[in-house]
Image (cartoon, rainbow, N blue to C red; front, side, top):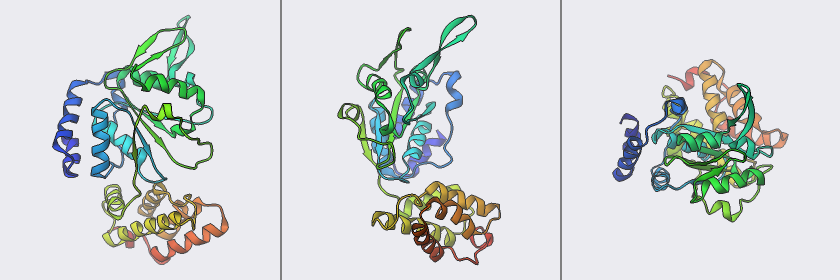
Length: 305
């Protein structure tokens, strides 16, 4: 299978690759959910993390991805869903996410009351991979649904309707950042339902892979400067010199996209990185770092060959 060559290229264990291949053959995707299988714009790069995640999922476990901002948690979750060839259901938790949104709500259709199925319900029914984004923002009402869904019972009671059993291919991948507004500590009962992977910070190697994959026409010397810029900001954030607001990998990649469109590099990076912080003193620090890496005189031709 062509998309599994990605794992071979990263020297992932052949036994694990074989396990993914057999999983895909064993669980055929329902046509109604096939459109939810999509290839991520960026595939996750990192042999050790991929091996841990794949082994856990093959063993029927759910996984929780923890760690600071910009470590690729969502990219990994989307990559895993694609490699296992499962429909992906993205569930973003916030203070207003209720059990009704996860399981479903009553709706009037064809002269009768029916259940409009929620994302967790559909994931359970079709054997999808549920990506539980910012799970540490879930309120108690939503957490109660997760407790039943994630434990050994693998079933959900739908009030007023019936009990649904999880499809044997269904898995759940939680993500959480530390210190965001509205987040809280996960209780032990919920954490015990996951195997936990602590995501490492980005390295020169992983950042280079992401930039080359996203924009293969970027000149090597320009890519080196963009990688260095992110690592410089990451170091300052680690040393508490700046917050993590400007440490935005999506913003950096978006800046590269606008440069390709024709915007001058410094202006693009200011939009994608510098302006993500609204504190004037912090913005000055970030801008100083940016200008050491991205000269003001640079044009599109300095970045793209």
